[in-house]
Length: 99
Image (cartoon, rainbow, N blue to C red):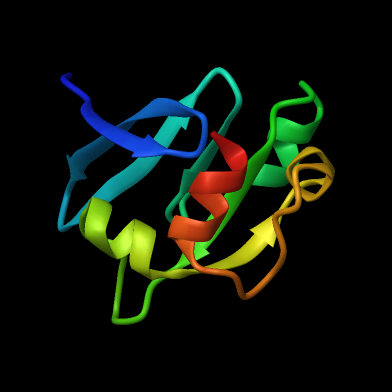
């Protein structure tokens, strides 16, 4: 599994698009946090103190990294909120704050 380098915020993150059946599991992460499609349980990641936000697509689904960055934050955990992530901001804005 190879990641796609994403420049956002202070550091780079790795973006991944993993086909699972008829959809893709899409996320970007680094040691500072994760933004991902609706398949991620970002609240469960809070138990580990790992900042995470779930992105809602503009269209039917988050199919690729562009969809992830162009979507909007639907849910975030407390650790992500502490980084300034807010519901409704773009995936790109969230990535810039998260990473």
